[in-house]
Length: 212
Image 1 (tube, rainbow, N blue to C red):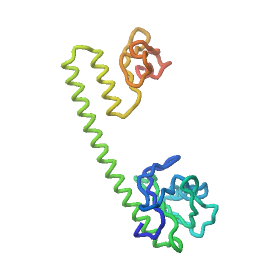
Image 2: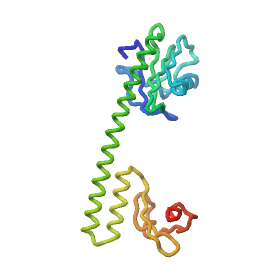
Image 3: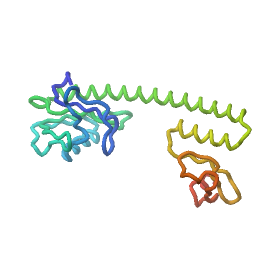
Image 4: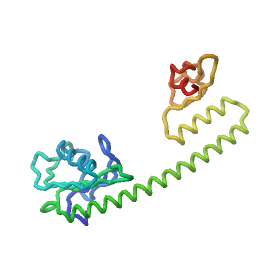
């Protein structure tokens, strides 16, 4: 914000239908990105599509943001955050006094590149932490299998570990029982299904398809 004389700064973490906002200008400022008008959203998409910053000055009232944070945006500058050629987010600047200049565009572009480096570092750290967690989970499961005499208990522990380490809401441990697969243990299933529910062991079901 200090490098470019803008009134508002938004740093969306990842583009989507509604970008997740991870940072914005300090003080009384409120986020602008989640409430952009259709015209401004189009400009932001253009920055990602073209893989380069896009700016617009002298905007009219028709380019106001919407919702609870509604305000008139008379100038905007969008700089894509690129990682491996993919647009992962957009640095969004608005309402520069006197409008944005080509120099502002270059500064925003440089900051967007720094954001990409930070993103890459964050992803590497997160992957390593997840890998370490998964290895620790496998070690715990191995110890449980050696110490626990009950197959049911081992399956229940495995289901709980998978749900936690892979961050998923639904896990099912199925056992082949004739021509069906029976749900022996799991996480996220409706009450009463575990131990009773069955699915076809053929390719007619997603679980059965995994056996083929």
